[in-house]
Image (cartoon, rainbow, N blue to C red; front, top):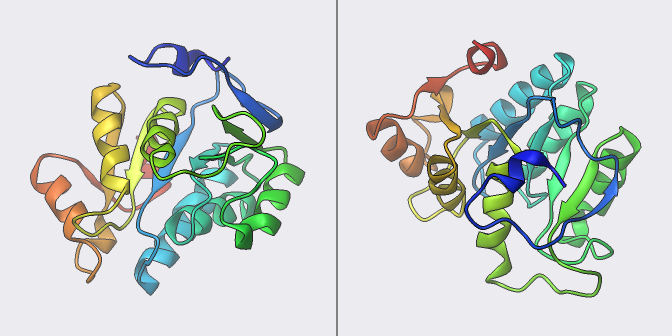
Length: 200
């Protein structure tokens, strides 16, 4: 059972996983954002996640379309052992379109993890619960690009409740899908441009 998850206010009763659980001593960075990113957001997610992978740092995200998927892809490209938190039983990849990405993640030494037993479907209320695990597994959370009503902002709220460091991507602050991260920036979240900024 991941030690950081045990520390949160409402830890899951049990954890299910496929692949290799992350080293409990390993720093992990969560990367989240909109399912409908701009080109700027896509490039940022891939670059920052790849740079983290090259430094041996796994990225945890939710395997959703958009920023999640590009973050996993970039981390795998950099040799990172990426972690996907699912909102359903682990035998059914959601969305199905990311099945190949999930397989690649496992091949690279990462894992699929979640609190829902085999057979559980991806119900609507599972996703906010899933988001608290994304932030719980990480020491730092980066919101790459998010509009005002993005689910990524739920993850940001959990990050603050759980005492995690919260960052936004500086180079995405000007995009059309960035109202949510501009709001986080105004509330005090530091803006970062690279993996090095997070590590520092």
